[in-house]
Amino acid sequence: MCSDDTSGRRAKLAEVNSGRRKRDLISTYVDILNAIGNGAKKSHIVYKANLNFTRCQRYLNDLLNMGLIKIETTPHLKWTITEKGRYFL
Image (cartoon, rainbow, N blue to C red; front, side, top):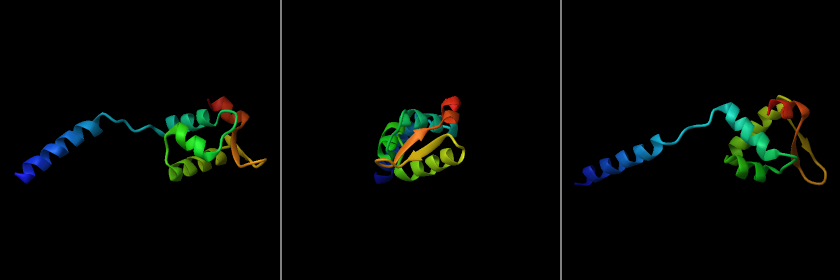
């Protein structure tokens, strides 16, 4: 009896998960750049781009290395989009 109930739950879970789509990397980069706008702290980017802090940091490092964003430290640590980043959008 227990195994039938478990398999039923698994089937429902599979149905729910099958409706979700993973974002491709470019879409994630675009979401991050849009979240940054004219400047944003990391917590704002995480919230607006729907990421966790670990992934957000990895993607921010990628965008920084590509020259699409930069870090401003006055008065607080803030991420901003470069001209190259605006062109990318």
